Length: 467
Ligand code: NDP
Image (cartoon, rainbow, N blue to C red):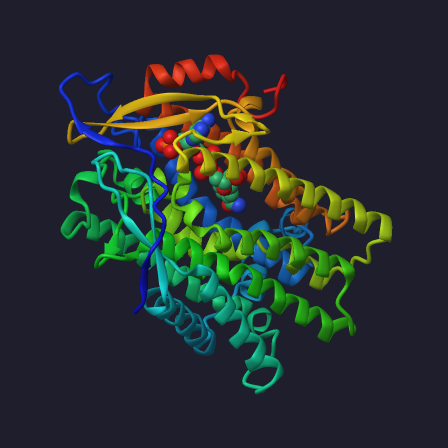
C-alpha cells in the first residue's frame, strides 16, 4: 500500500495555556441536552425519510414520476385502505438475491479500493477532543477505476448491460436499506462498546437523537478506514454518476437515443462529482467531516437517501423524454456552470487563506482575516483564522449560493411539467439554510468573541443585502 504524505493544510499551532479566551463550548460538536421537540423531530425524520424514498420510487416506477399520482389514487378510491394495500402490493420493490449480490459486491469492491489503492494522506480539522486525524485521499482513482470497469464490462466484455443499475433499481433499494439500517445500529453499538475516539463521543441522553445524529464523531476500523469519508464518498458519490449513466443507457434502450437533457444532466452531475474527488482533501475540512457525528443521518443517508434522491432527475428523464431547445440548453448550462464557478472559487479562497496562514492575495489585495483562538477539551489553545474579504466578505456562506445555482440547473434539465425532479433544489435549500444555523451555533461555540467580531464585519448570511 503506497501512502504518500500530503501537504498538510493545517493553520493551527498548539500551545498549552492556562489563560484561555473561552472554554470549548458544548455546542461545538453538538448539543448534549436536546429538547423534547428536537426528539420528536428526530423521530419524524427517522420514520419519514425511508417512507419518502419509497414514495418517490413508487411515483417514478408506476406513475411516470408524477408525484401526486399515488396519493390521488388512494384519495379518490372509495375505500382508501383497500386502495393503499392494492397499490403497495403492486408497486413495492421486492427482494432480489441478484440485486443484493450486486449491491454487496459493489460495496466490498469500493471498500477494497478505499483501503488498498495508493493514497495521499490528508488531515481533517482538529476535533473538539484535540485529535487531528489522517485520512486516505484516493477517491479520484477509485472513481476512475470503478467507471472504467463499469464501462468496459458493459461495452466491451459484455458482462452486464450498462442499464444494470436501472434494471435492478427496486432490488437494490431493498439491499441498500438493509445495509443502511445495519450500519446505523452497528455504529450505535460500536459507539458504546468499542469507540474509535472515546473523548469525541457525544451522548445526548436520547436514544432517538443519538441514533439519528450519531454518537461517535469519527468511527474507524484501524488507523485509516474512516466510516464517514468512505460512506459519503464511495457508495454515495461514486455511485451518483454511475447511476446517472445507467439511466442514460436505459433511456437509449427505450427511445433509441440519449436526450440532450440527459446529457446535460450527466455533465452537471459529473462536474460536481469529479470536483468533489479532485478536491477530496478540501472536503476533509467541510462541515460533513468536521462537525457531523456518524448516525442514521449519514449511515443510512449515504447508503439510500443520496443515491436514490440525488439522482431523481435521471429517473424522471427515462420516463419523460425532454428535448431541450438550444436556447434552453444554453441557459441551463450557463446557470449550472456559473454556480459551479462561484462554488469552487469561494471554497478555494477559504482553503488558500487557511493553507497560507492568511499570507495570500484575495481578489488582488492582501487577504483580510480575523486571527482567532479556540480551546479543545484537553485544555489546549489553538490558533485559526476567519477570512473576511473576497467572497467571504460578501456573505458568510456565499459558497452555498453557487451550490444552489448548480442544483437548480440540474433540476431544470427536466423541464417544468412535474415537481418531483425539483425535489433536489428544494431539499438543498432547506439543508443549506439549516446548515447556516447549525454552523453559526458551532462557530459561536468554538470561536466566541472572534465569531461575534466576524459577524459585525460580515453581517449577511447568504445573499448580500437580502439575507
Ligand atoms: P463551509 O465550507 O463553508 O465550511 C464552514 C466552516 O468553515 C465553518 O464551520 C468554519 O469551520 C469555517 N469557516 C467559516 N467561516 C469562515 C471564514 N470566514 N474563513 C475561514 N473559515 C471559515 O461549509 P460546508 O462544509 O457546509 O460546505 C462545503 C461545500 O459543500 C459548500 O460549497 C456546500 O455548498 C457544499 N455542500 C454540498 C452538499 C450536497 O449534498 N451536495 C451538502 C452540504 C454542503 P472551522 O473554522 O472550524 O474550520
